[in-house]
Length: 267
Ligand code: PTJ
Image (cartoon, rainbow, N blue to C red; front, top):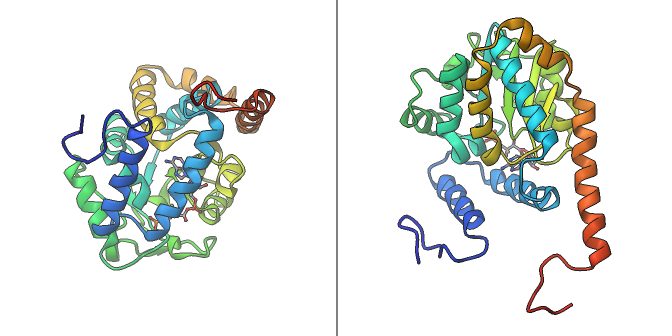
């Protein structure tokens, strides 16, 4: 049984994972993805194994807090890089529609043509406005020591809340130092991004994005006091600790058993 747009057999035990890899390698060709994006994805996959490849209760709490923070923001911005666009352009655009957050392309690897390719993918997914492309990224953030420092004055520069899926830590640290609320999605709870962010969703972006959209749709009807209540009871330190413990306890339990997969009943 083959799926129509790929040679991956649906019966392959890791069919979905292979399909995602194919999507990413395809987007190296379209320039959406940086070559380093493939390395980043591999690191993410390794942490996802440890997490159990599912959204945890801690991840869900972070998703709820993130939805509340975006809804409460005066000027929220969803920052889009190559991996985020390749993995879930539609859900990112949907989140911006539900919350009114602006979309801005912001890249670590600013090779020619990449910003435009990502803008095109976002527009194909329904985006009306995409900030940060080419000369539009005219403001400079001195707190950041990479190409990510060039931002759109209408977007990240003036944002109070910035959503940064799949990030490198330097920028998260810089944005937090500037007093912005930073929401990260990172499967690695040990990364600088995960550690520095205000709200860290330790989950696969592919699973977290649809949940974040539906959570924003749900919370949208609440008043500001209720949203503030959700945020004030949230502790990122607790969520990070719980995510690490989930990985540790899973490995510990598997270590006791000595096997992960039962292969032909052999031990
Ligand atoms: O498109 P560009 O030029 O902006 O570059 C984007 C990458 C991702 C290459 C750049 O930001 C980068 O180098 O990131 P890092 O430092 O490799 O960090 C990426 C983080 O994302 C790592 O901690 C991974 O564990 C994590 N990660 C990878 N895939 C996923 C993920 N987290 C959540 N969901 C994933 N699918």
